[in-house]
Image 1 (cartoon, rainbow, N blue to C red):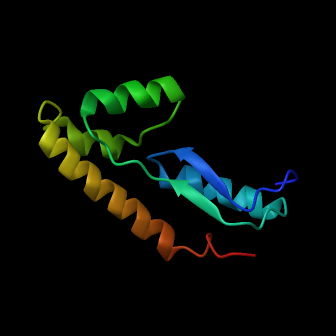
Image 2: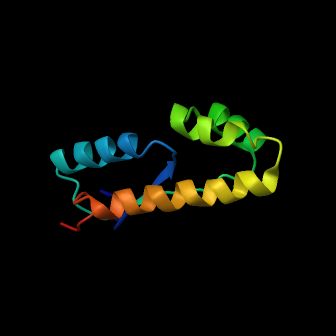
Length: 101
């Protein structure tokens, strides 16, 4: 921000609570620019595991549980992944954390 950025885009995540805590910390520190959440729909179970492990991202057990029975069916995983991403967006938008300034 000191170098002229006007907004923040976060790394992808699957735990909305982690994102909300991050936004609260930013606001408390006086960072009031827009913070764009890194929402990435899940494409396959194996890529979810690889990417989250590589990037050090925590995945709530509820997300893993929803995918467990279809983990070998990429189309079913994508469908559930889109549902999860939509739910995350709705939760974030329903909060008051993303307001500017």
